[in-house]
Image (tube, rainbow, N blue to C red; front, side, top):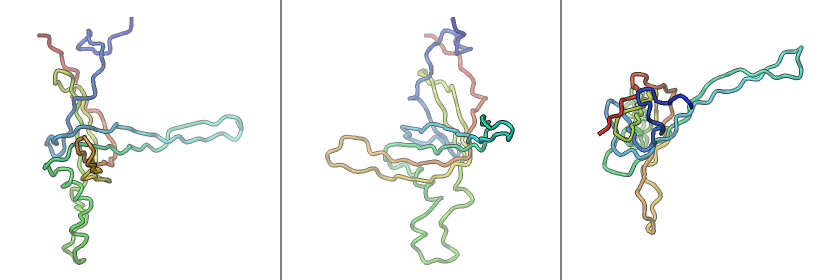
Amino acid sequence: MPAPEFKANASRWDPYKNFRFRVKWDNKYVAGISKVGALTRTTQVVEHREGGDPSVKRRSPGQSSYAAITLERGVTHDPEFELWANKVWNYKNSTAAMDSANKLVSLKDFRKDIVIEMYNEAGQKVVAYNVYRCWISEFKAMPDLDSNGNAVAIQSIKLENEGWDRDVSVTEPTEESF
C-alpha cells in the first residue's frame, strides 16, 4: 500500500480540485477572476560533447524562463485590470502633444508581485504561490461580441513575470468532520 499523500489528513486520497482559488495584488483580492493560467517554468538544455567521445552528447541545464500567466474574468465595472494595463501603456497620453508631461509608462509601479491561492472544498487555504515582477503584456478589455451568443463576456490580462515560488508558510490544514 502506498504512503499517504497528505500528512495531516492521512485518510484523504483525492487531490485538490482546481475550482477554488483567489488572486491578490497590492494586498487586495481581485474581484471575479474565473480562470488562472498554469504556472510553467522551462529550462533550456545545453548540449555539449567531449572531443574524445564523438558518439555521446552530454546535456546540462541552461537558462530558465517563466511562461506568461493569463487571468480571466467576466466584464464588470471593477477597473483593476484596466488600471494596471494603463500603467504599461496609456493611449490617452500617447495621443496628446509630446511634451515632458506625457507619461506612457508608469515606470515606478507598472510591475507588481501577485499571490495565487488555492483552497480545498471546505474553503481552507491549501497552497499559495508568490509570482514576482509581473506586468501586463496583453489586455483584452472586451471579447468578441455575438448577437446570437449565450455566454458571459470575458476580459483577460496576460502577465509576464520573472519567476514564482511556493509560499511554504501555507501548510496542509487539518480537515474537520461534522
